[in-house]
Structure formats: structure tokens, C-alpha cells
Image (cartoon, rainbow, N blue to C red; front, side, top):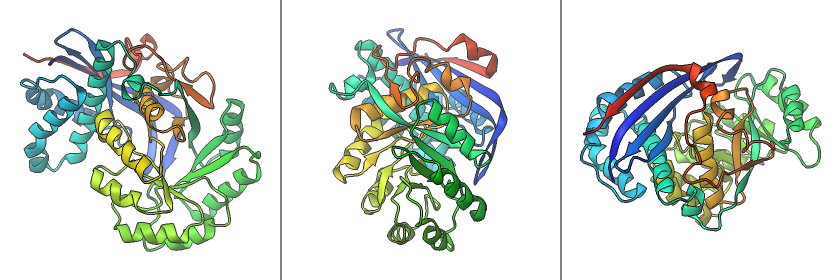
Length: 378
């Protein structure tokens, strides 16, 4: 099998309510989607991480059609894992030469998803059932992307949609962060839970005091309190201080670093992003390690419906205790792919059509295409 044709699309959906994080503001929802065909004329869809900064989508698209396709010409494969290994081997010198490891890892992850989609369609099975014949057809979810402004109203709106777990963005001014945590906590029902996402916003020099202040609240987890690249001694120190467990992983990009994190007792929830690093092929292996260390796999995701569906397939095949992250902010680039899957806010129902269950890009989102490119591979 070979890849014979690649088409990429950059989408951008303008949003009314700007999404704020500790590292910046998101004024739109971008997506970089690829549509590839193989030598059997089967189409597969993938998504390449680009949600911040959104300008990175254009650089990645240029790399795909100006450079990446050259490395695909001689690659023949019989399985997605074989493709993943071969493309990584071919790009090893380029990654070292350019220093763009993260960018190329994003691209490889997106192609891996698309190749798995083709593999599922070729074998007439959904991806989760290829990975695990006993995989559930649904996964549990939680509401993500809750901004500090009007956070309680957002939580109440999410409750009406069926969600019972809510993740609040913090990492700003700690007084306002704590006020919002207190406000939501006071209004939770018995079956509801609150998580907080610091987005790497606390420095290692002051994170200790924030953990001590936040210990009075019962939180399901504290996510990415410090830089993902911080020395392991700081992760250990923070986890020892915290009375709440810690979640992290979206900005870790190699298995060795994940293993170091997995060995820390208080880090319970592991959150790799399938569009950012590893695709299915790498995270399937990581999920086995996560289970071995008695942690819980909860995929990070904040993009279009393709990546969300892929995350759901991988979660359902690997960890029945995990939760799927669902952005609650309006975004047709997500919702138009997942109309049936997200009918009930508390669960995500996985299509049992072959591959990802995606046949085409929905017409309703084509008006948000900023640019598209096509390359035929001889």
C-alpha cells in the first residue's frame, strides 16, 4: 500500500467570545485537516494540531506539500505502524537539522490518524474494534474550555446539556482564580466534579504557594500546573504538596518523558494529544504503559471533530475509566462531524462504521476553508 494523493485544508471559524488561557487569547478556532488516498483508492482523514498559535497551520501546510510529500514517494506499508516507523526513520535527519521536532511530530500524528482511517475502511472495521475487539461503543466525557468570565453560568449551561464534570481555566490572577473555584464548588451537585487547568501558568518558583492555597478545595484534578518541560524534581515536589491529584501530558512528546511522569504517585491522569504527538500508533503503546503504572488515560483534545472522534476511538479501546475532553465553546468544525456522537453531553457515542466513520467533509463547514492544497505522489 502507498499514499498516492494528499489534500490539506485550513479552516478558521471566527468566535464571538474569545477563549482565554494563561498563554494567550484564541480569537478563532482553526483546524488543519488532511484527506489522503492510497493505492487502493481508499480515502482517510486526519487532523494536525494547530489550535495555538493558529498561524502555525499555514507553516505546516507548506511543509506538507513542499517537503513532507517528497518523503512519502518510496514508502510502502502493510499496516499503520509500519508507515509510522518508516516515515519517522526517513525524517530523522530532517528533524535534527531543522530543530522543528514538534512541528513534524504534529504532521506525522495527523498522517498516522489518516492511515489508520484507511486501514479501518480497508478491513471494514471501526478503529476501536481493530485495536480491541471488546472496545465500548461509547466513552464518558467532561466539559472543557470553561473561561473565567461568567464561569458559573457556563457550568450551569453545561449541566443542562448532560455534563457532570467541568474543567475551569485558571493560571491568571490567583485571587480571581480562587474566587471562581470557590463559586463553582459551592454550586456543584453531589454527583458533579470540578477540574482546573493551569495551562503551565505557574512558575516553579511560586507554584508551591498556589498548591497550598488550593488544597482547601476538592478537585478531580489540577492540570498542567507548571511547564511540561520542568525538571522532574519540580513535578515530584508539587505532587507531594498537593492534596489533589495532578493531570498532564498534552505537551510531552516522547515515551521516555512519559515514563518519568508515570512513576510519580500523585500524577494520576495522563493526557497525550493524538493530533500533537504519536497519533494512534504511538499512543496505543503509551496506553499500555499507563495501565501498567495504574494511571488513567484521558486524552487531551481541542480541535475539529476528526481529532475528537480519533481520541474517542483510542480511549474506548484502551481505558474504560478515562474521560473524553469535549470543548463546550461553539465550533462547527467540531460539531458538524459529531452530531450523533454528542447527542448526550455526558457520553460520546462512537460510530461503528469502518475507520473513523467519516466519509467526507461536511458541506456546512466548507465556507470556513481559508486555503486548500493538493499534491499527487508519483
